[in-house]
Length: 380
Image (tube, rainbow, N blue to C red; front, side, top):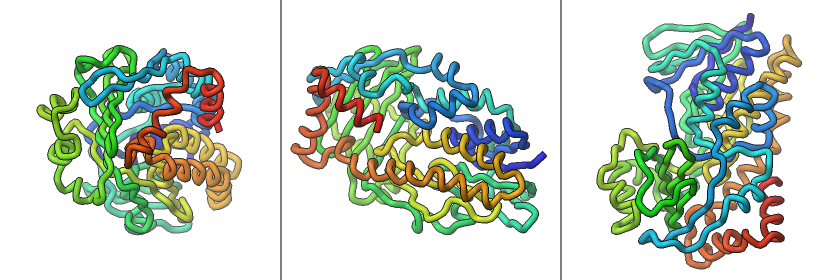
């Protein structure tokens, strides 16, 4: 039985563990966090990810956990209604083979299905490889050897740094910050079963209610120096970017638990190759398309499925398998990253014209011909 060490217990890492176990590999997953994460962004899971989920047997459970229907409700900064895109129109746009869910729910399904050894609170400090295998040194000084090392440790990947080089060589900063947190309740003025959005020049705030007590809040704003924002810390940075009074935002930031908040720059990872010897990167560690590009969860699951398929097709030639896997993904990743760079204004408009352009298609979405065009755009 071939052994694989997977660094990162997120969507990409767990999907890889599940698929490699299905083809007869023995996966060990290590994760620096002390426990599995929950919540996170709402994602539209579709395309190659949807197809992969069906093949590997997790689609029924994903469907059970997905949001059944939701409106897009656009509000003023004071929380007054502006316009609404009904759920029926949104489902026309995203199509039938798509699920909307919290990132944490997708991760939970993969966690339950993976049936792999997972060591939480474990960091990687060294990687060395030879013709026969790869050795990984962990933070406690222990060493494990495997046939393959998979770096699924996200945008700020340690495996990528140790094997491929410093982050600055691959990171493309898109000049925006994002914050995300789970909310204990739906703020006053936010409709049940809706994505309630306040979008202004330079900033957007969203409250997403996916039902069953699952409520999340998202902050997105433009900034010239993401490093300076990170140095400020999430509380100070967000209060400066979203000065009060503002609907729901001011109260949320007043009692913010910074430890429960995801806060980072919006960026992409662009690399000439995703593997080196017996080390391969998957998910955001290899090709982060960013929040603006979307589709990251779908690429992570679809990429893991394809990796296992090519490894199974080339059981005695790891190099050929990884080359075939990368060739099968390159065009899709490049297209999604291009869309992400072109889609910045849709999340944090830089001026009033971009704000108007962002909202015009949504205002018209109730018109059937426009809904048809939007569905074709999202499915393309």
